Image 1 (cartoon, rainbow, N blue to C red):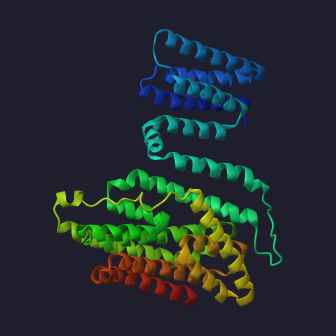
Image 2 (cartoon, rainbow, N blue to C red):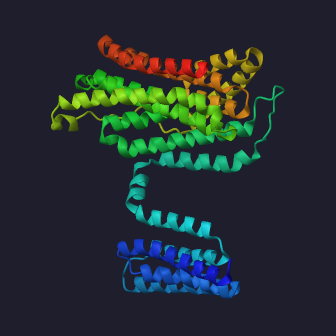
Image 3 (cartoon, rainbow, N blue to C red):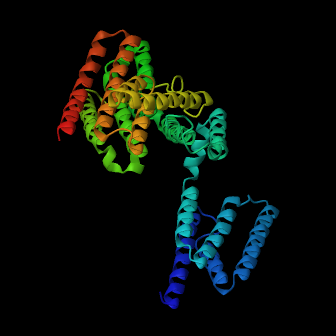
Length: 425
């Protein structure tokens, strides 16, 4: 590339980064706005192009200016502009990165900084929603992941070449992290209505949500009419989570390995969504607007515990470790039949663990695409029927339980048809 053109690109990129961050500060009515940030990034770029030593010297000057401005604010009995000051210093460093030629890192960091500045209210709300126990659990899991994970051996430690400690621990970290994100979303948005709670809670633990709703029906007869529909939404989320985990953990082998599983579970998810949509639409036509807004809220905090509690992480880790060893031995001794049995039995305790197990076996090539799809259908079937059984056990209402079972049957039939088509073609 021509040298003059490259210089022009660097100057333009530096100005764009400064404008991006500066616009947000301008909209927030801060004294340092578009011009200040654009000058800061351009200063970093230009000084690096002149001499790297000059860039380091000017960064020290920028820090000194920021310090003096904050001291002056204190002297005038004004509040410190700590966030804006840090953003201005970061913008100057991003300008230096552009001068180096690392455009990707510079633009990525600029977008993240702008997002953090823009989402101030949302981040404050999120931090206020989390409890001290959850924050400590997240920090502890992060420490264990950063310190313990690299120390674990990255090879099989058993004679049957089944158990890889680092792989098992990485799975626990990923699944716990994803579950925690869903849990936080539930804590933030679940209080808006029972249907939000069912979808978000189903991504974490559909069986727990079935217990929650069944107890709500037991305590409040007014919640009975919508209960089967709301559990159907939880089932939809559970099916979504199952095939998404399979695709995620089978990804190293390529999407083709997980394609039969997707072809089986996605139509089941669509069937659940279509049924829930039509039932909800029909119920809305027969209700007034005020009765819709008075839907009972789900006290999700009572039974749906944080997935990053040490007890939850340890329980999932032990369960997944057991399933990994047993499924590996069963596959070697009994082939696909043994693998199917382990996945189905494991789904009684955790459908998520069975989904991850199927994805990992697909990635390692220990099981074929068709047996994996059949195994995931059976595991999902166990999850669907388990929710019906839980609902009936808690409520002891045969009519409502029969209605829930009636909603579940078409989903199962769609799965059966898709399994037959996948096996045949």
